[in-house]
Length: 109
Image 1 (tube, rainbow, N blue to C red):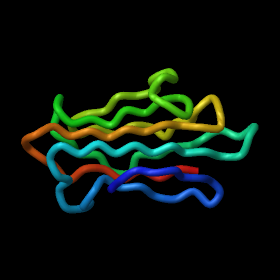
Image 2: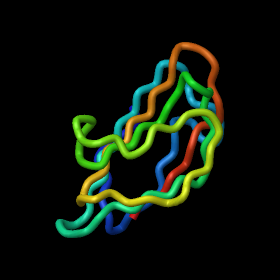
Image 3: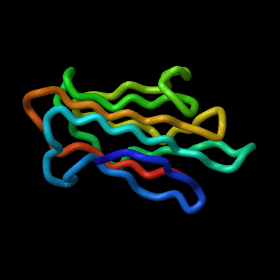
């Protein structure tokens, strides 16, 4: 499986399944990133190539998908590094039943 609980420090790098090869169809991966109370999560997208309009990466400002959506990404895009407003960030990757791409890599701190 993919996804899981991540913490910083130490921080680290996360990739889509099989990266840099193509991810599979019908994937759902969820990560919860937690840093020390009183700190914020910093996220940098290093590489991003998904099937435009069908596969996506959604980033939430908090520990679950009931929190405010910070960013919804699809296709090929570059984004400036960004931060949460709290000590947690929730990230979900989903792919549909056809067409795959290289995927993504992001780093967090």
